[in-house]
Image 1 (spheres, rainbow over the protein chains, first blue to last red):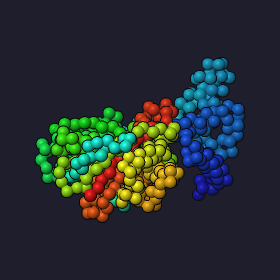
Image 2 (image 1 turned 90 degrees about the vertical axis):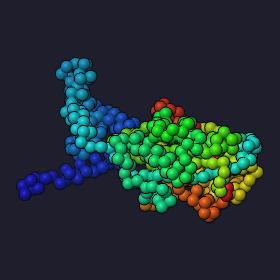
Image 3 (image 1 turned 180 degrees about the horizontal axis):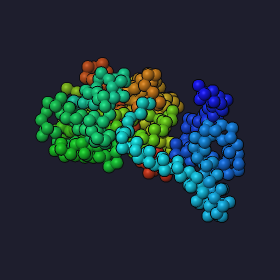
Image 4 (image 1 turned 90 degrees about the horizontal axis):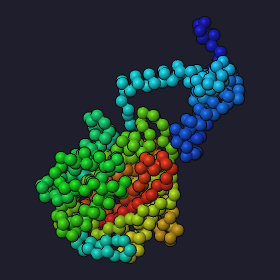
Length: 128
Length: 334
């Protein structure tokens, strides 16, 4: 009961709405433009990095939590954040090191879990 | 055999379509034409390890089926014309490597079915062959993997995209028989109107279908109403509408007797394939399964079959090239 009571329902709603809006933008890009999924992905990551770099994205993360960090834009913002931090502690070389360092956990987990999934599953036909 | 008009070949001795066979995948088996196919598979792997192997097995078994249905011994089939969509046409060459029939690999993308029949008909009519086998195949999964994205990526298909038909169609052309007969061939020119979207093939191929249709009608002096049905291979819903509109600009009304195999093979409302079917097997299975039987039973007597092909590959798409289209037509009459 304590756990349920400790949940900030407004926070979850904000998270849901912000992540939903980001996904709606992606859906519009798929349906209304000729962008390939790969390009859409790159647009999301770079937009996140730019917004992160100029300090806007951290405000969104503060507002929506996982609703802002889980979508691809959050990955971009994380790259920017890591690069900026590393630059301030290590100088210009940090621009190359920081981004990947900050997102190392996510990248390694994606590679490792992707590998695991490929061992135990087989691709299937789409439903639609 | 002689050339009439600008690019049509009129066969003096019409070539008999002795037999056809078709095998389709699970999605096609749920479609409105399911009952017309010889065999419906419930698994897109068909017990094989890869989709490419499955596609080879599908064309192999379709060819075996058409030969056994025709009742003529294997050694009496003089030549085989076959092709598919995979790089270097491996479905056909791997699937038919144990066939022991002289083999011509044909690539015309989704127009391969009719292209093979055009070539085979010329062989039969000229006396170079008595019986010729023509076959083609495609597979949704192997085609998506090669031309678009890996299925593991799980990305969405845009609304204009078409669903590559899993299956194979095969025919045996013969010098003698009771028909239906192939009477005219109109090989098409390559037409490129600058469409670059690999997810909108119908729009890329419709101008080629239009060019071949108009040329065929001019060369033969026929009107669209001469045919009980004018059938395109895989323009899908979007391409079909474009072709009707293009024809209307020339004052030709094809609304009454025109349809497309990609529109017929799936149910638009219950099967969410977006813009309909496509692929070599689209025209191949719908003709071999459905239209051949309609012709045999004399429910229709004259059809103009126009198979459409998009002549791009994955490299040309990545380099932003436009998609050249081609369409080959044959008239089949009872």
